Amino acid sequence: MKTVTIDVRPLADTLGDFTQAWKSGKASAPRISFESPELLFKVLSGKRWELLNAMTGAGPRSIREAARRVERDVKDYMVCDCAA
Image 1 (cartoon, rainbow, N blue to C red):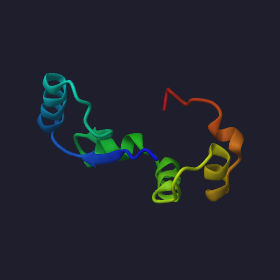
Image 2 (cartoon, rainbow, N blue to C red):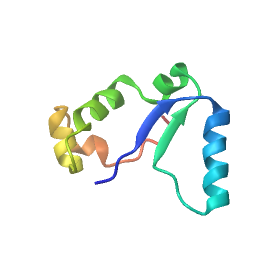
Image 3 (tube, one colour):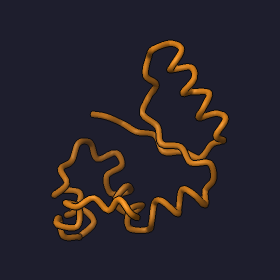
Image 4 (cartoon, rainbow, N blue to C red):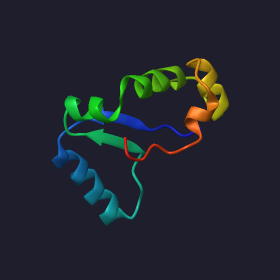
């Protein structure tokens, strides 16, 4: 099972992790960092946050199971909403 950490932290810390990974040649743990809570919640809308909460700690799940847990149509997850 893969785990990704979502957090709020300064850009300097994120760039420091990148630099360390680059110099060592070893990948760091998967992480998505936001510079501010405002930016985090701009990207993670209420529905996306609901989906993350439903999946957190649940172990590996299919897209169909994730949609079922939040009572939505699986078709909503089959197209990338890259503009959002």
